[in-house]
Image (cartoon, rainbow, N blue to C red):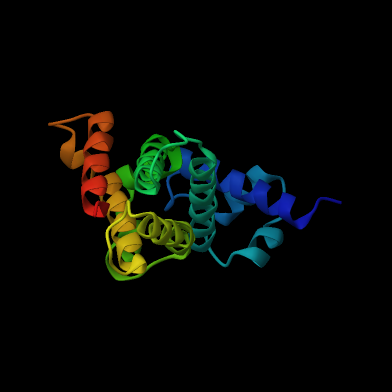
Length: 193
């Protein structure tokens, strides 16, 4: 018998394939169940609707990106601020290249409105759990300016998110690599003592 985690991952993988192919609005839990090779009740027991399923999918994908960036090594002499900026730029780069995030930002950006203008979601909290202690560590080593680490971490998060979701506003003046370079300069300047 398959483990619960294995079944959930199969369902989330199927949801990702459906959203990338059809978009969020045209993805149904029935489609996801069929693609995952599980019964509809198996999906409905875990998620009440496609919106909840996609929210969990986005959280899973962002956690993977964050883990990959956290595992990325850098120059041993690099300051904490430099590491944080490099990792934030890496997350931004990965989000720009991620087919699921690109699909949602390009075709259904209104789905992100609540998490852009009104409240933090699970993905935001996952990111902040990683960024806040790094900001505090950078303050201790003197590479990050003083201030409430929660505020600084949140502004880093919102800046990365805003840059990624607004990338089309820069398309006529710079490519994605240039946008990441500018984001790096912006974050480094903001965090510098």
